[in-house]
View (cartoon, rainbow, N blue to C red):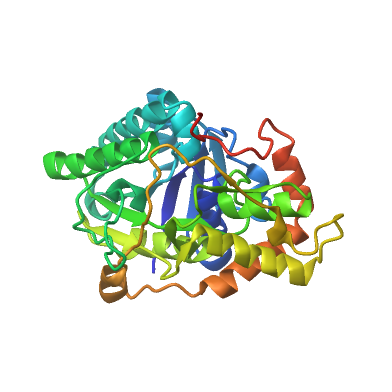
Length: 358
Protein backbone atom coordinates (compact mmCIF):
# COMPACT_ATOMS: atom_id res chain seq x y z
CA UNK A 1 0.00 0.00 0.00
CA UNK A 2 1.15 3.54 -0.81
CA UNK A 3 2.27 5.32 2.32
CA UNK A 4 -0.22 7.83 3.74
CA UNK A 5 0.20 10.87 5.93
CA UNK A 6 -2.23 10.85 8.86
CA UNK A 7 -3.12 13.93 10.87
CA UNK A 8 -4.06 12.56 14.29
CA UNK A 9 -5.72 14.84 16.82
CA UNK A 10 -5.29 13.90 20.47
CA UNK A 11 -2.22 11.86 19.64
CA UNK A 12 -0.61 12.38 23.05
CA UNK A 13 -3.57 10.78 24.80
CA UNK A 14 -3.98 7.15 25.77
CA UNK A 15 -5.55 5.79 22.57
CA UNK A 16 -3.94 8.31 20.23
CA UNK A 17 -0.42 7.53 21.41
CA UNK A 18 -1.09 3.79 20.95
CA UNK A 19 -2.19 4.46 17.37
CA UNK A 20 0.92 6.52 16.67
CA UNK A 21 3.28 3.92 18.15
CA UNK A 22 1.57 1.27 16.03
CA UNK A 23 1.85 3.32 12.83
CA UNK A 24 5.50 4.27 13.30
CA UNK A 25 6.62 0.85 14.54
CA UNK A 26 4.65 -1.39 12.16
CA UNK A 27 3.89 0.52 8.93
CA UNK A 28 5.47 2.90 6.41
CA UNK A 29 2.86 5.64 7.00
CA UNK A 30 3.70 9.00 8.59
CA UNK A 31 1.98 10.96 11.36
CA UNK A 32 1.33 14.58 12.27
CA UNK A 33 0.29 14.57 15.94
CA UNK A 34 -1.89 17.54 16.89
CA UNK A 35 -2.47 17.77 20.64
CA UNK A 36 -3.26 20.58 23.06
CA UNK A 37 -1.47 18.71 25.89
CA UNK A 38 -4.15 18.95 28.56
CA UNK A 39 -3.80 16.99 31.82
CA UNK A 40 -4.19 13.58 30.13
CA UNK A 41 -1.89 14.31 27.18
CA UNK A 42 1.61 13.03 27.81
CA UNK A 43 4.43 13.13 25.26
CA UNK A 44 6.39 10.63 27.37
CA UNK A 45 4.01 8.03 25.93
CA UNK A 46 5.63 8.74 22.54
CA UNK A 47 9.31 8.83 23.54
CA UNK A 48 9.97 5.62 21.60
CA UNK A 49 8.97 7.26 18.29
CA UNK A 50 9.57 10.98 18.82
CA UNK A 51 12.81 11.05 16.82
CA UNK A 52 11.47 9.08 13.87
CA UNK A 53 11.54 10.99 10.57
CA UNK A 54 7.92 9.96 9.90
CA UNK A 55 6.63 11.60 13.08
CA UNK A 56 5.91 15.31 13.73
CA UNK A 57 4.30 16.92 16.78
CA UNK A 58 2.28 20.15 16.69
CA UNK A 59 0.97 21.55 19.97
CA UNK A 60 -2.33 23.08 18.91
CA UNK A 61 -5.93 23.35 20.10
CA UNK A 62 -8.62 22.05 17.73
CA UNK A 63 -10.75 25.01 18.84
CA UNK A 64 -8.19 27.38 17.26
CA UNK A 65 -9.28 27.57 13.62
CA UNK A 66 -6.24 29.55 12.44
CA UNK A 67 -3.80 27.04 13.93
CA UNK A 68 -5.68 24.07 12.48
CA UNK A 69 -5.79 25.72 9.05
CA UNK A 70 -2.02 26.27 9.22
CA UNK A 71 -1.41 22.62 10.12
CA UNK A 72 -3.51 21.40 7.16
CA UNK A 73 -1.78 23.73 4.73
CA UNK A 74 1.70 22.93 6.01
CA UNK A 75 1.47 19.14 6.17
CA UNK A 76 -1.12 18.25 3.48
CA UNK A 77 -2.47 15.09 5.16
CA UNK A 78 -4.21 12.24 3.33
CA UNK A 79 -6.31 11.11 6.31
CA UNK A 80 -7.56 12.79 9.47
CA UNK A 81 -8.08 10.62 12.54
CA UNK A 82 -9.91 12.67 15.15
CA UNK A 83 -9.34 11.47 18.73
CA UNK A 84 -8.97 14.80 20.55
CA UNK A 85 -11.64 14.95 23.23
CA UNK A 86 -12.28 15.47 26.89
CA UNK A 87 -12.93 11.86 27.74
CA UNK A 88 -13.47 11.16 31.41
CA UNK A 89 -17.10 10.74 32.52
CA UNK A 90 -16.39 11.78 36.11
CA UNK A 91 -14.74 15.02 35.05
CA UNK A 92 -17.72 15.77 32.80
CA UNK A 93 -19.98 15.57 35.85
CA UNK A 94 -17.76 17.92 37.85
CA UNK A 95 -17.26 20.39 34.98
CA UNK A 96 -19.20 19.84 31.73
CA UNK A 97 -18.24 23.14 30.08
CA UNK A 98 -14.86 21.94 28.78
CA UNK A 99 -16.54 18.88 27.26
CA UNK A 100 -18.99 21.03 25.31
CA UNK A 101 -16.18 23.26 24.07
CA UNK A 102 -13.69 20.58 23.02
CA UNK A 103 -15.92 17.72 21.96
CA UNK A 104 -18.62 19.70 20.15
CA UNK A 105 -17.21 23.10 19.18
CA UNK A 106 -13.73 21.65 18.57
CA UNK A 107 -15.12 18.93 16.31
CA UNK A 108 -17.11 21.54 14.36
CA UNK A 109 -14.01 23.70 13.85
CA UNK A 110 -11.91 20.70 12.81
CA UNK A 111 -14.62 19.55 10.37
CA UNK A 112 -14.81 22.97 8.76
CA UNK A 113 -11.04 23.39 8.43
CA UNK A 114 -10.70 19.84 7.09
CA UNK A 115 -13.53 20.43 4.60
CA UNK A 116 -11.97 23.67 3.40
CA UNK A 117 -8.66 21.88 2.91
CA UNK A 118 -10.36 18.95 1.11
CA UNK A 119 -12.22 21.28 -1.27
CA UNK A 120 -8.87 22.65 -2.38
CA UNK A 121 -7.46 19.22 -3.23
CA UNK A 122 -7.48 17.72 -6.71
CA UNK A 123 -7.42 14.31 -8.37
CA UNK A 124 -6.54 11.18 -6.43
CA UNK A 125 -5.56 13.11 -3.31
CA UNK A 126 -9.07 14.55 -3.07
CA UNK A 127 -10.79 11.28 -4.04
CA UNK A 128 -8.92 9.23 -1.41
CA UNK A 129 -9.13 11.74 1.48
CA UNK A 130 -10.90 10.51 4.65
CA UNK A 131 -11.98 12.01 7.96
CA UNK A 132 -12.15 9.25 10.58
CA UNK A 133 -13.99 10.28 13.74
CA UNK A 134 -13.26 8.12 16.79
CA UNK A 135 -16.11 7.80 19.28
CA UNK A 136 -17.39 5.64 22.12
CA UNK A 137 -20.08 3.07 22.90
CA UNK A 138 -21.27 5.36 25.69
CA UNK A 139 -23.30 7.36 23.14
CA UNK A 140 -25.74 4.43 23.01
CA UNK A 141 -26.63 4.69 26.70
CA UNK A 142 -27.62 1.74 28.85
CA UNK A 143 -28.47 -1.77 27.63
CA UNK A 144 -31.69 -3.19 29.05
CA UNK A 145 -31.27 -6.97 28.91
CA UNK A 146 -28.35 -9.20 29.76
CA UNK A 147 -28.03 -10.45 26.18
CA UNK A 148 -28.56 -7.22 24.23
CA UNK A 149 -25.65 -5.73 22.27
CA UNK A 150 -24.94 -2.33 20.75
CA UNK A 151 -24.94 -2.48 16.96
CA UNK A 152 -24.19 0.28 14.47
CA UNK A 153 -27.96 0.83 14.19
CA UNK A 154 -28.59 1.26 17.94
CA UNK A 155 -30.30 4.56 18.74
CA UNK A 156 -28.35 7.14 20.72
CA UNK A 157 -29.34 7.70 24.36
CA UNK A 158 -26.35 9.27 26.15
CA UNK A 159 -26.49 9.53 29.94
CA UNK A 160 -23.55 11.74 30.98
CA UNK A 161 -22.31 15.15 29.84
CA UNK A 162 -19.32 13.31 28.31
CA UNK A 163 -21.39 10.87 26.26
CA UNK A 164 -23.86 13.60 25.26
CA UNK A 165 -20.98 15.72 23.96
CA UNK A 166 -19.53 12.75 22.05
CA UNK A 167 -22.98 11.94 20.62
CA UNK A 168 -23.24 15.55 19.46
CA UNK A 169 -19.88 15.32 17.72
CA UNK A 170 -20.93 12.07 16.01
CA UNK A 171 -24.06 13.80 14.69
CA UNK A 172 -21.98 16.69 13.35
CA UNK A 173 -19.65 14.30 11.51
CA UNK A 174 -22.59 12.48 9.90
CA UNK A 175 -24.25 15.78 8.98
CA UNK A 176 -21.09 17.02 7.25
CA UNK A 177 -21.01 13.80 5.22
CA UNK A 178 -24.69 13.92 4.26
CA UNK A 179 -24.96 17.66 3.67
CA UNK A 180 -21.58 18.49 2.17
CA UNK A 181 -20.56 15.02 0.87
CA UNK A 182 -17.47 15.36 3.05
CA UNK A 183 -15.81 11.89 3.23
CA UNK A 184 -16.26 10.86 6.85
CA UNK A 185 -16.54 7.57 8.73
CA UNK A 186 -17.02 6.81 12.42
CA UNK A 187 -15.93 4.14 14.89
CA UNK A 188 -17.47 3.53 18.31
CA UNK A 189 -15.35 1.54 20.76
CA UNK A 190 -15.87 -0.19 24.08
CA UNK A 191 -13.82 0.44 27.26
CA UNK A 192 -10.10 0.61 26.51
CA UNK A 193 -7.35 -0.49 28.87
CA UNK A 194 -3.61 -1.12 28.62
CA UNK A 195 -0.21 0.58 29.00
CA UNK A 196 0.12 4.37 29.29
CA UNK A 197 -3.45 4.94 30.55
CA UNK A 198 -3.94 7.97 32.78
CA UNK A 199 -4.37 6.73 36.36
CA UNK A 200 -7.82 8.20 37.01
CA UNK A 201 -9.27 5.32 34.96
CA UNK A 202 -10.34 2.17 36.77
CA UNK A 203 -7.59 -0.34 35.95
CA UNK A 204 -4.47 1.84 36.45
CA UNK A 205 -6.08 3.42 39.51
CA UNK A 206 -6.57 -0.01 41.07
CA UNK A 207 -3.02 -1.14 40.23
CA UNK A 208 -1.33 1.97 41.61
CA UNK A 209 -3.56 2.32 44.68
CA UNK A 210 -3.01 -1.35 45.59
CA UNK A 211 0.76 -0.98 45.40
CA UNK A 212 0.55 2.03 47.73
CA UNK A 213 -1.82 0.29 50.17
CA UNK A 214 -4.64 2.74 49.42
CA UNK A 215 -8.34 1.93 49.20
CA UNK A 216 -9.55 0.42 45.92
CA UNK A 217 -12.74 2.44 45.29
CA UNK A 218 -15.62 0.66 43.54
CA UNK A 219 -18.72 2.58 42.48
CA UNK A 220 -22.04 1.30 43.87
CA UNK A 221 -22.18 -2.50 44.02
CA UNK A 222 -19.49 -2.98 41.37
CA UNK A 223 -21.79 -4.97 39.10
CA UNK A 224 -21.69 -2.53 36.19
CA UNK A 225 -20.77 -4.49 33.04
CA UNK A 226 -18.33 -3.23 30.42
CA UNK A 227 -16.75 -4.78 27.32
CA UNK A 228 -12.97 -4.42 27.71
CA UNK A 229 -10.78 -3.71 24.65
CA UNK A 230 -6.99 -3.84 24.84
CA UNK A 231 -5.68 -0.53 23.54
CA UNK A 232 -3.18 -2.04 21.06
CA UNK A 233 -6.02 -4.04 19.49
CA UNK A 234 -8.00 -0.81 19.20
CA UNK A 235 -5.03 0.96 17.62
CA UNK A 236 -4.76 -1.73 14.94
CA UNK A 237 -8.49 -1.48 14.30
CA UNK A 238 -8.47 2.31 13.99
CA UNK A 239 -5.71 2.35 11.39
CA UNK A 240 -7.38 -0.51 9.50
CA UNK A 241 -10.69 1.39 9.39
CA UNK A 242 -8.97 4.62 8.34
CA UNK A 243 -7.27 2.84 5.44
CA UNK A 244 -9.98 0.41 4.32
CA UNK A 245 -13.32 1.51 5.79
CA UNK A 246 -16.14 2.74 3.57
CA UNK A 247 -17.10 6.41 3.53
CA UNK A 248 -20.30 7.20 5.51
CA UNK A 249 -20.09 3.90 7.41
CA UNK A 250 -19.92 3.32 11.16
CA UNK A 251 -17.97 0.44 12.71
CA UNK A 252 -18.28 -0.76 16.29
CA UNK A 253 -14.99 -1.97 17.81
CA UNK A 254 -15.22 -4.30 20.81
CA UNK A 255 -13.01 -6.68 22.72
CA UNK A 256 -15.47 -9.57 23.27
CA UNK A 257 -14.72 -9.31 27.02
CA UNK A 258 -17.83 -8.53 29.06
CA UNK A 259 -17.01 -8.29 32.76
CA UNK A 260 -18.42 -6.65 35.85
CA UNK A 261 -16.23 -3.92 37.32
CA UNK A 262 -15.81 -5.93 40.52
CA UNK A 263 -14.58 -8.92 38.46
CA UNK A 264 -12.01 -6.68 36.78
CA UNK A 265 -10.76 -5.36 40.11
CA UNK A 266 -10.50 -8.82 41.66
CA UNK A 267 -8.60 -10.07 38.59
CA UNK A 268 -6.09 -7.23 38.91
CA UNK A 269 -5.71 -7.99 42.62
CA UNK A 270 -5.03 -11.68 42.00
CA UNK A 271 -2.34 -10.89 39.40
CA UNK A 272 -0.72 -8.45 41.84
CA UNK A 273 -0.89 -11.10 44.59
CA UNK A 274 1.09 -13.38 42.28
CA UNK A 275 3.62 -10.87 40.95
CA UNK A 276 4.19 -8.59 43.97
CA UNK A 277 2.81 -10.23 47.13
CA UNK A 278 1.60 -7.68 49.66
CA UNK A 279 4.02 -6.53 52.34
CA UNK A 280 1.40 -4.21 53.84
CA UNK A 281 0.54 -4.56 57.52
CA UNK A 282 -2.64 -6.58 57.97
CA UNK A 283 -3.12 -7.09 54.21
CA UNK A 284 -2.39 -10.59 52.93
CA UNK A 285 -4.33 -10.10 49.67
CA UNK A 286 -4.88 -6.86 47.76
CA UNK A 287 -8.60 -7.67 47.49
CA UNK A 288 -8.87 -6.67 51.15
CA UNK A 289 -8.37 -3.04 50.07
CA UNK A 290 -11.62 -2.97 48.05
CA UNK A 291 -13.93 -0.21 49.27
CA UNK A 292 -17.42 0.51 47.93
CA UNK A 293 -18.15 4.21 47.38
CA UNK A 294 -21.22 6.24 46.40
CA UNK A 295 -22.27 5.61 42.83
CA UNK A 296 -21.54 7.90 39.89
CA UNK A 297 -24.41 10.18 38.90
CA UNK A 298 -26.39 8.63 36.02
CA UNK A 299 -24.18 5.54 36.00
CA UNK A 300 -25.08 3.16 33.14
CA UNK A 301 -25.29 -0.48 34.22
CA UNK A 302 -24.24 -2.35 31.09
CA UNK A 303 -22.45 -1.68 27.81
CA UNK A 304 -21.63 -4.40 25.30
CA UNK A 305 -20.52 -4.11 21.68
CA UNK A 306 -21.55 -6.25 18.73
CA UNK A 307 -18.40 -6.13 16.57
CA UNK A 308 -19.73 -8.46 13.86
CA UNK A 309 -19.69 -5.80 11.14
CA UNK A 310 -16.00 -4.92 11.39
CA UNK A 311 -15.13 -8.64 11.54
CA UNK A 312 -17.21 -9.52 8.48
CA UNK A 313 -16.60 -6.46 6.30
CA UNK A 314 -13.04 -5.47 7.24
CA UNK A 315 -11.72 -8.78 8.61
CA UNK A 316 -10.69 -7.35 11.99
CA UNK A 317 -10.86 -9.17 15.32
CA UNK A 318 -8.98 -8.50 18.57
CA UNK A 319 -5.79 -10.44 19.30
CA UNK A 320 -5.94 -10.20 23.09
CA UNK A 321 -8.30 -11.92 25.48
CA UNK A 322 -8.95 -10.13 28.74
CA UNK A 323 -6.74 -12.67 30.52
CA UNK A 324 -3.74 -11.95 28.28
CA UNK A 325 -4.34 -8.21 28.00
CA UNK A 326 -4.82 -7.55 31.70
CA UNK A 327 -1.66 -9.47 32.59
CA UNK A 328 0.33 -7.43 30.04
CA UNK A 329 -1.19 -4.27 31.51
CA UNK A 330 -0.34 -5.06 35.13
CA UNK A 331 3.20 -6.08 34.15
CA UNK A 332 3.65 -2.81 32.23
CA UNK A 333 2.65 -0.67 35.21
CA UNK A 334 4.99 -2.65 37.47
CA UNK A 335 7.85 -2.11 35.01
CA UNK A 336 7.17 1.59 34.39
CA UNK A 337 7.00 3.18 37.81
CA UNK A 338 8.87 6.28 36.58
CA UNK A 339 6.18 7.03 33.97
CA UNK A 340 3.49 6.56 36.59
CA UNK A 341 5.26 8.79 39.11
CA UNK A 342 5.71 11.59 36.59
CA UNK A 343 2.08 11.45 35.52
CA UNK A 344 0.97 11.54 39.15
CA UNK A 345 3.25 14.50 39.94
CA UNK A 346 0.53 16.74 38.49
CA UNK A 347 -2.72 17.80 40.10
CA UNK A 348 -4.35 14.39 39.93
CA UNK A 349 -4.05 12.62 43.29
CA UNK A 350 -5.76 9.28 42.75
CA UNK A 351 -9.25 10.31 43.83
CA UNK A 352 -12.45 9.19 42.14
CA UNK A 353 -14.25 12.15 40.60
CA UNK A 354 -17.97 12.49 39.88
CA UNK A 355 -19.18 10.70 43.01
CA UNK A 356 -22.71 11.51 44.11
CA UNK A 357 -22.68 13.72 47.19
CA UNK A 358 -25.19 13.00 49.95
